[in-house]
Length: 294
Length: 147
Image 1 (cartoon, rainbow over the protein chains, first blue to last red):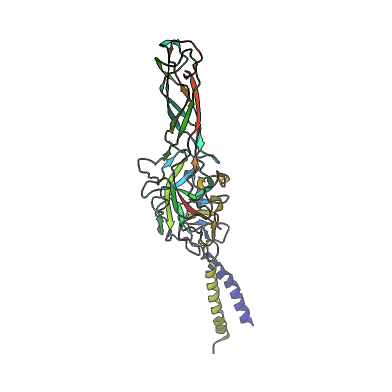
Image 2 (image 1 turned 90 degrees about the horizontal axis):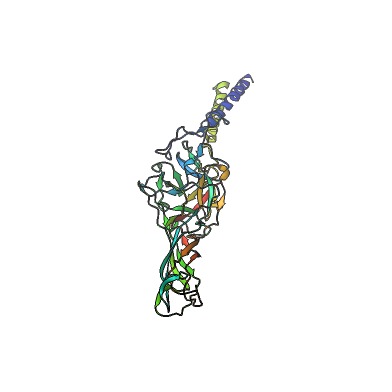
């Protein structure tokens, strides 16, 4: 009986210790295969002061990852990505430098406007009078070309967007129970993709649009991919054209039509091709490396 | 003949081994359940291939839209404009107002009833440009959010 009591007491002490040891062995910081080759990751994982001593909390994404979040704040181990604030993140092309920006950041909810120079040239027809050119009546105009140059009114491109919190991972990865899914695309604030990731192909130099429901995936459209070099970012411009109309009013002259006071501008409706100067949209961008999990 | 002490020790050792194994098996990774990939809940990411993997769902707020990064969580979720359709290269146009000034060309004659000539004056020309695209390059990719 006394021996049973002694062994029960021994187990009562040992059991809790074993349980604690098992839990402390979990969630190790693993500088594993998804660890980045650059970036500014400092410490490995984040110690959670609220859990058992020695437990490290974190997530499986590599340091220097830049991701969007639907939530109230950056997760633990992430910080707001200030460099991209108010900008579209556009994947770099091949080895073109990351960090290049265009335009000024959008204010929250801003529908950025832009303008164009507008020009047209009207060719006025000729009319003549039975009379003498010159004299004192300057009420009529001359025949020939007359130009118009002005600025268009501002307009938006109409491109729709959603603002999402962007955060940058500053800690080492803590693996999940399953591997990171193949096909996962992530921006990285670094020069090269981490091990296990390759630079995306279809997205290079393109604005990423969330796939509309039922649409074919990974399809490119619009203009050709941006190509930026060390000389500076590729700022894409566009133009418009149309027909402009000039309606003149008449000025009556007390002379019959005919010879030989000629070369005066004929009253009428004149059409001209209207062209705009090239202008960029003003949409602000940040070029950044885009990688896909293999 | 083993002593009572040795018999108790023999029964206790397998139990100890089981307890140790149970403790270590309980020590899983930091995130989620046994099939979790370790990505934080609420992460929005694009996926090639057109489908969201297990544990992820379509980020419907991103469908047909570009994404603008913001650093203030209070600005997250704001939308501008109407979503694009499949491979839609959104068009836009501008209005304009300009002036055309027709100068004078003198004639030796009084004002009268022959209205064939255009008056020498400034004219306002208004109009609208044709529709045009931004010329920007796009790619449409499946947006997913980690549950």
